[in-house]
Length: 230
Length: 252
Image (cartoon, rainbow over all chains, first blue to last red; front, top):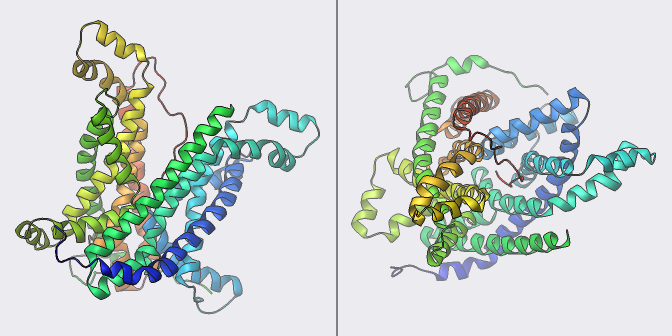
């Protein structure tokens, strides 16, 4: 079945694939995950706010992000970020923004909506009495959240947050549509240059599978361990 | 720094000459829906089969089901798209592969896109079906056995009718996901809604008009799906059972 296929092309391009491509993918995943979790948590707190306007604003943002395909969001930000940047620094022309920065902003903002829903469920899973006792001790809203609610919520949600991060790791491959050189982008450049699409795309699939599957096994083990403690 | 909106562009003729840009985008929506619906039908059937099999007592079938789920869950959708579009035709016998590659556009990208989305989504449906079946009290299954039903009959008459009604809400969000995910098909050349918004941006240089229009169309589509599914959920709700919303799921 594989007669006439040249698997040596993979070996030749390994340094490029991993040092350029995989580093891009992993950096993007790390930035978007940490940024997304921070913004997602803030959004979740906004959504649960007693102020109607604040919760509606956050809810609107989250629902908007969740109703639109990621590919379209990537396009949106790819063109929007230069304009916003120009507007912020008061330039006449849209500023130049590289694919990486654009992707980092896109994925942070997009994933924030998904992390928000996870954190919201986490915050809501904490017993009301915890909040009340915080206030009864004289803690402010931010102290109660920071010292009592969020640490517990975060811990409850660690497995789901990590699973979402694995999905994010896979989704970063969509930066292909703005021609960024992530792992898939790098492989696709080699594939098209040497006309070795079968070999390269099969290899990409195997690598993504191995990484995602091993990470998901780790998450499952973590989940079991956390479940035992309770 | 300001952007000059020019909404009239939607009523201008697109370069292909088939009509206005608005019409061009709406044809894109039609392709999005045609892709999503066809894939959804296959995904439901496959997902129901795999999900059910994974709850049975046949150990080899459970293993096979698990393997299927893990493979298609751990490879990014766009990579699966490329596998179906670039790789599968090469691995098939030459004549069949050539026939696939020579399919006239847009069918040459439509068929791989549907297959890819169907299998990708079937895994997620399978997970929901399995969760739905496992959420039923064990007594249901035992009662079936006690009444002398075979395993197949228990599934057919006792378990599945309840499970499907329970998992309707998560299936709704999977259906919305398949609509959104169909946009990835633009990478293999299918001009669905997002692909057409992108093309419109390239032809007319009206970036934000094109993307705003596509966004609004997606939002309206979502709204219609939500309302329709809410009506369906109401009409098939199992009396006395609270819908299995439960634990939050990671998704995209």
